[in-house]
Image 1 (cartoon, protein in one colour):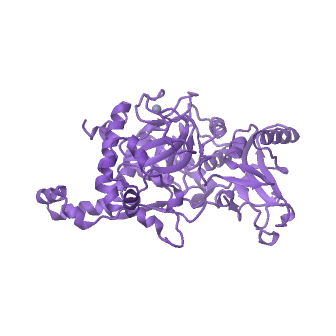
Image 2 (tube, rainbow, N blue to C red):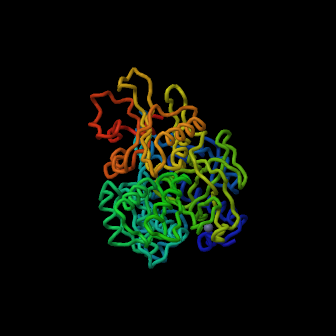
Image 3 (spheres, helix red, strand yellow):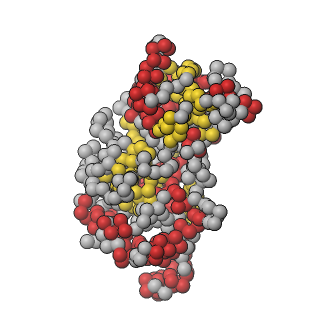
Length: 517
Ligand SMILES: [Zn+2]
């Protein structure tokens, strides 16, 4: 089969063809790119008695050990560990390849040299957000930027963009994949995209002013920030009838959040709105999107690019690869990356509908698709678990409990010590914005019941705030990312920042809980 089909017909191949072409591409990639030039994987393959030719089918890939975030973290013995994952070509090896000699004859030595520069010299980076450790940089070469553009162009296509549309990119301006995927995707697709840099750069007010001027059909950004922007637009009685689509990324999207955004958009006069999610992570160096459902209630699915990378779904406990359609943890292997490269990367993301190859029921495309909801996997150490009041609590679950709850808008969970005394017991304070006419005592009862049903604990106090106070608590316009769960337990009274008048405590100076696990 022609290996180019994987790229030219990326959304139109049957499962068997995809798997066969991916296996061929993988072997070629390992033999010519990853193994010769990655210090880390050269050593891993040597230690396990493997060679590129040991991997002849996608099943054979299971012989390669997993990589995870832990492998990329620096240690005292390896202060620059991530460097071992960067492909550094050996000029001697490249120069003696027959393909190099042939190209030098046909195109000249300079062209060949420029080609290798573009392929291997790192010129760009994004990095992990450093929740549990120092941020880990992922380097891109020109070759990778071309793929970032290609992935972005396809992402826009999947999410239903049209050239005539106007888009606004509300992701925070930082070396984060989401911002740059949107920027490069917009440029490659050829659609007008204004990047505001999010709340920290222009403030919610500045974003709203620009929305008023540009009148975009599409908003792209983090769910929590877009929520605040739309909420403020409702308070200011603005009309956003031009809105057709909200594209979400950078964090998980609970169903309750989709409902709340759809409700706000309709209050703003938007009709026929679609809310689509994207999925991506630093280590993949690309993101994937859902296609619009036009009110379809079936679970969403992300449309993958089979020529740029492959996913496996594994049992997070045993590490065993699972057949299509089985829920499990997503594991990613790139097929065309340069710069920083991780193979069989355990994402820690659990997909509840598994990976399927059937045509998408919404758009008919035949790409591999992870289907359903993505949550953090319990098999991974980086899980957001912590002890509150002696009980182990899963914050992923708490987030869903709150995002899915009716009658509340923005919320924040604050962990603190009683009376700010470090020796005292933990307290859990829930700050919420009450949305409608529901009585406060009834809402407190409802929320407590939801908590106990899902987590066996309930908040010590529930404090009500208006939208402005919630914005202040969550650090909208101050933090790069809005703070939904804050841990103030390590702060003594003297270290606290001054408290906003109506709030029990400020989240602005606190660490996110994600730091603690
Ligand atoms: Zn689709």
